[in-house]
Amino acid sequence: MVKLPKILKGDKMIIKRDLYLNKLIKKQHNGQVKIITGMRRTGKSYLLFHLFHQYLTENRIDESHIIEIPLDDRLYKELRDPDKLLYEIRSRMTDNQIYYIILDEIQMVAEFEDILNSLLHIKNADIYVSGSNSKFLSKDIITEFRGRGDEIRVHPLSFKEFISVFQGTKQEAWNDYYTYGGLPLTLYYESHEDKSNYLINQFKKVYISDIVERNNIRNTDELEELINILSLSIGSLTNPKKLSDTFNSVKGIKLSQATIKTYLDYLEDSFLINKSLRYDVKGKKYISTPSKYYFTDLGLRNGRLNFRQQEENHIMENIIYNELLCRGFNVDVGVVEVRELKDGHSLRKQLEIDFIATSGNKKYYIQSAFDMRQDAKKVQEKRSLRIVPDSFKKIIVVRDDIKIKRDDDGIVTMSIFDFLLDDLSLDY
Image 1 (cartoon, rainbow, N blue to C red):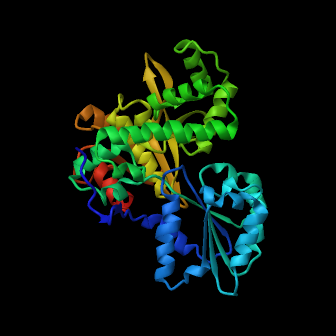
Image 2 (image 1 turned 90 degrees about the vertical axis):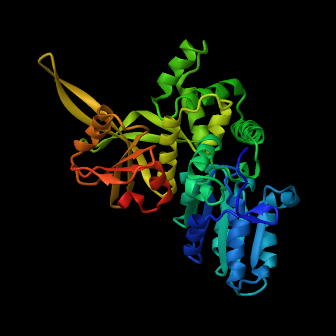
Image 3 (image 1 turned 180 degrees about the horizontal axis):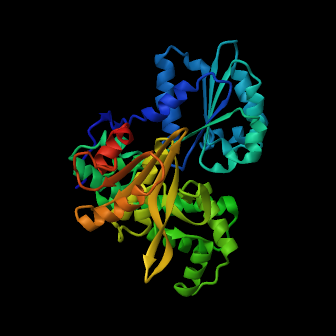
């Protein structure tokens, strides 16, 4: 039986999302549209309508100056008409004090770009909008905003957020997290059956349905088969050609590289997966193909496979990747080229660094090493880090709950728990 959460309010769980709430607070009154993005069911509406609303009222903002419209609610169907929406907002602004305009699922409004630009002309309007796909953040729309759009990406619960409302041991929390992922509503269910049914149904009836409807996909079997292949190979190098070959050889289906690329774009667009490019550390350039794909939520991925294939080492790598994204890093796959002598010949070999995490002038090289108790494994994991030709921090994250240690080469080894639970873990 899954442990019950320990933070309750009435019959509801309170999950603090301070990372995102603080971002909203810092961006108040900055003259830009605050655009809250992320996949469905990650808590964007809760962040805006509950946590941010509570912050505003606690800071003496009158309720009449908080204009909230959840556009995915059928009660507000008429306001999906852009002119009616603009009239509704304007009619509720009756004085010169600041009004906080919060529009949830803005992509459901036709010509919403014009609406947002119109609102930007209102001096006493502070604007917050959400959306569940990245189409409304296309280059054309950003151009429409003329640099006046400010994105905040909301991810599923981090392990630190997850464990804050989990009653049980750290190990029990980890087992639940890598199995059921970080969609907040999974914490409301107690049994494996209820959790798994929720995740499987969400994937099928919400996420896939959204993609099919939005992009007018006729052959859904091909899309679903691609999702299955990606689910089986998280963190593996691939590209449209490899995937096309897999369809042909394993599934007996001929699917063009162009179609596969289009489907991959759809999955990224819906925030279901993220793509990580390869970066040549010594050559200081990107390698266009192949790339790696990671799932935004592991519970959805595991549910897609009916929880049959839960390789904890690959899942841990995906969790590390997601944590780095949550902390605001750009994340690439590192490649370091070395030369080796074999039978008297000098051969080139590429060694991999799982992640290069960069933010401004900060950079970290990170290896995900599930088990590093054997000496041979230690040599293997450290080899690529040792030949990196710069002095940025080099870190190995292991599954064992060990104490943080640094070797003579300056390489830090830490447990997955220290990495995930301490916001400053990368700077030890």
